[in-house]
Amino acid sequence: MISGIVNLKKEAGMTSHDAVFKLRKIVQEKKIGHGGTLDPDVTGVLPIALGKATRLIEYMQEEGKVYEGEVTLGFSTTTEDASGEVVAVAPVDEKLTEEDIDRAMQSFVGTIIQVPPMYSAVKVNGRKLYEYARAGETVERPQREISIYAFERTSSVTFENGCARFDFRVKCGKGTYVRTLSVDLGKKLGLESHMSRLVRTGSAGMSLDTAVTLSEIADLVDKDDWSFLQPIENGIGDLPIVELTAEELREVGFGRFLELNHTAKRLAAFHQGKLVAILEKREQLYKPNKVFIEVF
Picture 1: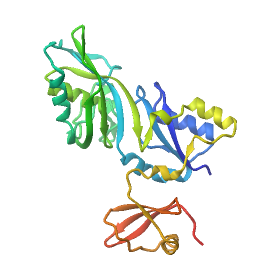
Picture 2: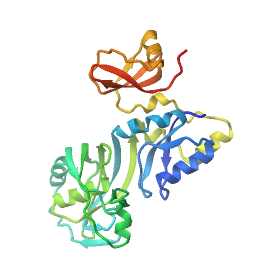
Picture 3: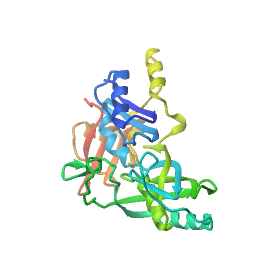
């Protein structure tokens, strides 16, 4: 079994599922999964876990993600991004200031409520929202609580043909739709808007500058070069780390409870630099929830 994490640079035009399918064929590993869906038109970091690392996917998904993109003010679309059909047009008054935009963006930082877009894979009554949208049907969408850690403008605002455009950077938690954030920003400013470009530059502690494409991975595998494969230790997300003694390591190997001086609900247990288990707190003790080594 091949175990590790791949920092894949997903290209436009493929779903996250497509990327996993193609990588499975390249590395010949059946046990494989991604650490956070990317829309087909969105490029950037897509962490993919292989072998034992697939047991860490839930923690990889919990860690914050970083996106960079562009917002266009002046018209909205069905899909909330550039791929959709125009829904409404409202020319932007050039009196709109960068200070107005910055103040509105800052108001989204923190824990907020977001309604997912109709063109999304969120399920309602057993059907995905985009299935309702494609059938021309409407349905009440569930609200969700999301975390926005930073939302900032990274370029000057340009005005052209009744539209205003600017680049942005956002760091957010699991379940955030940046498309919807862009639309909600427009509403905050009293304007029609959509997300006109997006790339994920960071996810699960991985960054775009070290990501590799499927074709690059295929070339490396042909040369029996597996340097692109990161250790499973990189997949623990934001979990606090605890170093186990040799005696504690043995107890974990037998699935026994440990008494540790920690308050976190879950811990990533290491021994001599290697991930050995994920521990979960049960009352005052920690029980091995997922064990990655065999102890004899």
